[in-house]
Length: 165
Image (cartoon, rainbow, N blue to C red; front, top):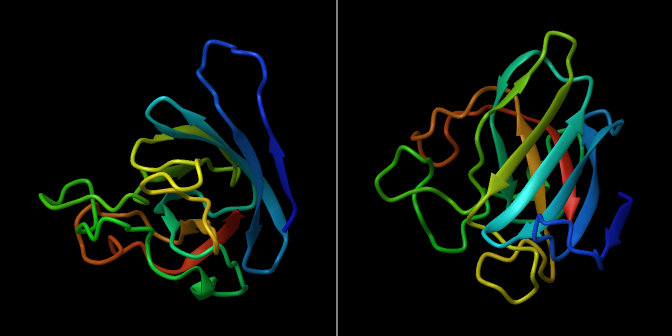
């Protein structure tokens, strides 16, 4: 579970404070891509590049524990939810801080997408910090997230996982 941390010293106009590159693994423990997480004024931008996934829509979430043990990745725990909200952007008492938009994987099994996670931070000690004593995990699920079903959006099994520490 290699991890690279860089501190941007120049301001490229994107207001990046810190970025982390995490490796994404499938349930056969094969590295299938990376996600670069960058702190911005409002949340964290995720630049995900991965291959070898089933085509179609997939749920995409931060989970509460930075532990990705294949094949099920259940060690990552539940969705990252420090405010005890309900799941889903369509729920009146939601979303979880770790709820993210569905990913659309192309027919070739690849995804290259940028997502802004407005409800999380890379700053240790901040509200909804992804980086703490046990970290968090970025998970890609088997099915799309329906945006409302409790507690996980009916997104199915966990296909891929990356540790954020």
